[in-house]
Image (tube, rainbow, N blue to C red; front, side):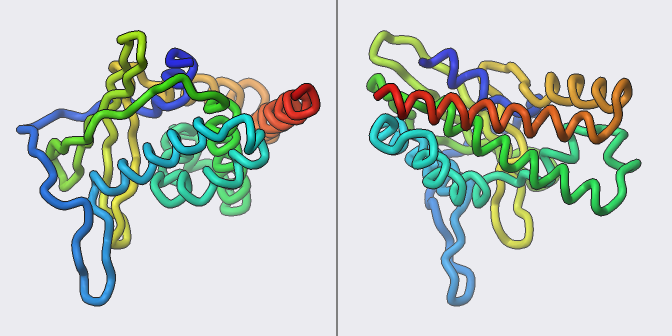
Length: 219
Protein backbone atom coordinates (compact mmCIF):
# COMPACT_ATOMS: atom_id res chain seq x y z
CA UNK A 1 0.00 0.00 0.00
CA UNK A 2 2.76 2.44 0.98
CA UNK A 3 4.68 1.91 -2.23
CA UNK A 4 1.56 2.48 -4.36
CA UNK A 5 0.82 5.77 -2.60
CA UNK A 6 4.43 6.82 -3.22
CA UNK A 7 4.02 6.41 -6.96
CA UNK A 8 1.09 8.80 -7.27
CA UNK A 9 2.01 11.59 -4.88
CA UNK A 10 5.29 12.72 -6.47
CA UNK A 11 4.88 15.58 -8.93
CA UNK A 12 7.97 17.63 -9.68
CA UNK A 13 11.62 17.87 -8.68
CA UNK A 14 12.65 19.74 -5.49
CA UNK A 15 13.84 23.32 -5.28
CA UNK A 16 16.73 24.57 -3.18
CA UNK A 17 16.03 24.41 0.55
CA UNK A 18 16.75 27.01 3.20
CA UNK A 19 16.64 26.99 6.98
CA UNK A 20 13.74 24.89 8.35
CA UNK A 21 11.12 26.63 10.47
CA UNK A 22 8.21 25.19 12.40
CA UNK A 23 4.97 26.88 11.38
CA UNK A 24 3.47 28.70 14.33
CA UNK A 25 0.00 29.04 12.86
CA UNK A 26 -1.85 27.00 10.27
CA UNK A 27 -4.12 29.93 9.39
CA UNK A 28 -3.82 33.72 9.30
CA UNK A 29 -6.52 36.37 9.33
CA UNK A 30 -6.80 38.71 6.34
CA UNK A 31 -9.54 41.26 6.82
CA UNK A 32 -12.71 39.28 7.41
CA UNK A 33 -11.27 36.11 5.87
CA UNK A 34 -9.23 33.31 7.37
CA UNK A 35 -6.58 32.09 4.92
CA UNK A 36 -4.88 28.73 5.45
CA UNK A 37 -1.11 28.92 5.62
CA UNK A 38 1.14 26.32 3.94
CA UNK A 39 0.98 23.90 6.88
CA UNK A 40 -2.79 24.31 7.05
CA UNK A 41 -3.12 23.43 3.36
CA UNK A 42 -1.02 20.29 3.73
CA UNK A 43 -2.77 19.26 6.92
CA UNK A 44 -6.15 19.53 5.19
CA UNK A 45 -4.91 17.51 2.23
CA UNK A 46 -3.29 14.77 4.30
CA UNK A 47 -6.20 14.53 6.75
CA UNK A 48 -8.54 14.05 3.80
CA UNK A 49 -6.36 11.29 2.35
CA UNK A 50 -6.34 9.39 5.65
CA UNK A 51 -10.10 9.86 6.13
CA UNK A 52 -10.79 8.55 2.63
CA UNK A 53 -8.45 5.60 3.13
CA UNK A 54 -10.24 4.66 6.34
CA UNK A 55 -13.62 4.63 4.56
CA UNK A 56 -12.29 3.42 1.23
CA UNK A 57 -14.33 0.23 0.89
CA UNK A 58 -17.55 1.86 2.08
CA UNK A 59 -17.15 4.85 -0.21
CA UNK A 60 -16.10 2.90 -3.26
CA UNK A 61 -14.28 4.54 -6.16
CA UNK A 62 -17.03 7.07 -6.95
CA UNK A 63 -17.39 8.07 -3.31
CA UNK A 64 -13.64 8.51 -2.91
CA UNK A 65 -13.55 10.62 -6.07
CA UNK A 66 -16.39 12.82 -4.81
CA UNK A 67 -14.74 13.42 -1.43
CA UNK A 68 -11.27 14.03 -2.86
CA UNK A 69 -12.23 16.30 -5.77
CA UNK A 70 -12.89 19.55 -3.85
CA UNK A 71 -9.85 19.12 -1.61
CA UNK A 72 -7.42 18.21 -4.41
CA UNK A 73 -8.54 21.15 -6.55
CA UNK A 74 -8.40 23.52 -3.57
CA UNK A 75 -4.94 22.49 -2.37
CA UNK A 76 -3.15 21.92 -5.72
CA UNK A 77 -2.54 24.38 -8.54
CA UNK A 78 -3.40 21.80 -11.19
CA UNK A 79 -3.36 24.25 -14.13
CA UNK A 80 0.26 25.16 -13.35
CA UNK A 81 1.23 21.51 -12.88
CA UNK A 82 -0.46 20.63 -16.19
CA UNK A 83 1.43 23.42 -17.93
CA UNK A 84 4.77 22.22 -16.58
CA UNK A 85 3.98 18.66 -17.66
CA UNK A 86 3.65 19.78 -21.29
CA UNK A 87 6.90 21.73 -21.35
CA UNK A 88 7.53 23.62 -24.57
CA UNK A 89 4.37 22.25 -26.17
CA UNK A 90 2.13 24.28 -23.85
CA UNK A 91 3.04 27.45 -25.77
CA UNK A 92 2.01 25.80 -29.05
CA UNK A 93 -1.53 24.98 -27.93
CA UNK A 94 -4.58 27.11 -28.62
CA UNK A 95 -6.62 28.48 -25.72
CA UNK A 96 -9.24 25.80 -26.38
CA UNK A 97 -6.64 23.03 -26.32
CA UNK A 98 -5.12 24.35 -23.09
CA UNK A 99 -8.54 24.40 -21.44
CA UNK A 100 -9.28 20.86 -22.59
CA UNK A 101 -5.95 19.57 -21.35
CA UNK A 102 -6.24 21.21 -17.93
CA UNK A 103 -9.74 19.79 -17.46
CA UNK A 104 -8.62 16.30 -18.49
CA UNK A 105 -5.45 16.46 -16.39
CA UNK A 106 -7.49 17.59 -13.38
CA UNK A 107 -9.90 14.68 -13.77
CA UNK A 108 -7.01 12.25 -14.09
CA UNK A 109 -5.26 13.64 -11.00
CA UNK A 110 -8.38 13.17 -8.86
CA UNK A 111 -9.12 9.78 -10.40
CA UNK A 112 -5.59 8.61 -9.62
CA UNK A 113 -5.91 9.54 -5.95
CA UNK A 114 -9.35 7.88 -5.79
CA UNK A 115 -8.08 4.70 -7.43
CA UNK A 116 -4.86 4.34 -5.45
CA UNK A 117 -6.01 5.34 -1.96
CA UNK A 118 -8.33 2.36 -1.77
CA UNK A 119 -7.42 0.83 1.62
CA UNK A 120 -6.14 1.70 5.08
CA UNK A 121 -3.41 -0.16 6.95
CA UNK A 122 -2.80 2.10 9.94
CA UNK A 123 -0.75 4.73 8.09
CA UNK A 124 -0.25 8.16 9.66
CA UNK A 125 1.35 11.43 8.59
CA UNK A 126 3.82 13.18 10.88
CA UNK A 127 3.24 16.80 11.89
CA UNK A 128 4.28 19.04 8.96
CA UNK A 129 7.09 21.59 9.26
CA UNK A 130 8.01 24.47 6.94
CA UNK A 131 11.15 25.45 5.05
CA UNK A 132 11.33 28.83 3.36
CA UNK A 133 12.40 28.78 -0.29
CA UNK A 134 13.62 31.52 -2.57
CA UNK A 135 11.10 33.66 -4.41
CA UNK A 136 8.53 33.51 -1.63
CA UNK A 137 7.73 29.80 -1.96
CA UNK A 138 7.51 27.50 1.05
CA UNK A 139 8.40 23.82 1.41
CA UNK A 140 6.32 21.77 3.84
CA UNK A 141 7.83 18.47 4.99
CA UNK A 142 6.02 15.43 6.38
CA UNK A 143 6.40 11.66 6.51
CA UNK A 144 3.87 8.92 5.84
CA UNK A 145 4.58 6.16 8.33
CA UNK A 146 3.26 2.59 8.37
CA UNK A 147 2.89 0.24 11.34
CA UNK A 148 5.65 -1.98 9.90
CA UNK A 149 8.14 0.87 10.30
CA UNK A 150 8.39 1.86 6.64
CA UNK A 151 8.08 5.54 5.79
CA UNK A 152 7.95 7.92 2.85
CA UNK A 153 9.32 11.47 3.01
CA UNK A 154 7.06 14.06 1.37
CA UNK A 155 8.22 17.56 0.48
CA UNK A 156 5.45 19.86 -0.73
CA UNK A 157 6.40 23.09 -2.46
CA UNK A 158 3.70 25.73 -2.12
CA UNK A 159 3.25 29.15 -3.70
CA UNK A 160 0.89 31.96 -2.75
CA UNK A 161 -1.42 32.43 -5.74
CA UNK A 162 -4.27 34.97 -5.70
CA UNK A 163 -3.96 35.18 -1.93
CA UNK A 164 -4.09 31.40 -1.37
CA UNK A 165 -1.31 28.86 -0.84
CA UNK A 166 -1.34 26.06 -3.40
CA UNK A 167 0.80 22.96 -3.94
CA UNK A 168 2.85 23.32 -7.11
CA UNK A 169 5.36 20.56 -6.46
CA UNK A 170 5.40 17.32 -4.49
CA UNK A 171 8.55 15.24 -3.97
CA UNK A 172 8.47 11.80 -2.35
CA UNK A 173 11.83 10.39 -1.29
CA UNK A 174 13.42 12.63 -3.90
CA UNK A 175 11.56 11.01 -6.82
CA UNK A 176 9.76 13.21 -9.34
CA UNK A 177 6.62 11.86 -11.00
CA UNK A 178 6.08 15.02 -13.05
CA UNK A 179 9.47 14.61 -14.69
CA UNK A 180 8.28 11.21 -15.92
CA UNK A 181 4.93 12.66 -17.00
CA UNK A 182 6.65 15.46 -18.86
CA UNK A 183 8.85 13.00 -20.74
CA UNK A 184 5.84 10.80 -21.54
CA UNK A 185 3.45 13.60 -22.51
CA UNK A 186 5.91 15.48 -24.71
CA UNK A 187 6.89 12.22 -26.40
CA UNK A 188 3.26 11.45 -27.23
CA UNK A 189 2.64 14.95 -28.58
CA UNK A 190 5.82 14.88 -30.61
CA UNK A 191 5.06 11.49 -32.13
CA UNK A 192 1.26 11.43 -32.33
CA UNK A 193 -0.08 14.91 -31.62
CA UNK A 194 -2.17 16.62 -28.98
CA UNK A 195 -5.39 14.67 -29.60
CA UNK A 196 -3.60 11.39 -29.01
CA UNK A 197 -2.30 12.62 -25.64
CA UNK A 198 -5.75 13.73 -24.47
CA UNK A 199 -7.20 10.40 -25.61
CA UNK A 200 -4.52 8.56 -23.65
CA UNK A 201 -5.37 10.46 -20.46
CA UNK A 202 -9.09 9.89 -20.95
CA UNK A 203 -8.47 6.18 -21.48
CA UNK A 204 -6.67 6.06 -18.12
CA UNK A 205 -9.56 7.81 -16.40
CA UNK A 206 -11.99 5.31 -17.94
CA UNK A 207 -9.77 2.43 -16.79
CA UNK A 208 -9.85 3.66 -13.20
CA UNK A 209 -13.62 3.98 -13.40
CA UNK A 210 -14.06 0.46 -14.77
CA UNK A 211 -11.82 -1.05 -12.10
CA UNK A 212 -13.71 0.86 -9.44
CA UNK A 213 -17.03 -0.44 -10.74
CA UNK A 214 -15.71 -4.00 -10.88
CA UNK A 215 -14.41 -3.75 -7.31
CA UNK A 216 -17.80 -2.50 -6.12
CA UNK A 217 -19.60 -5.32 -7.92
CA UNK A 218 -17.28 -7.93 -6.38
CA UNK A 219 -17.71 -6.69 -2.81
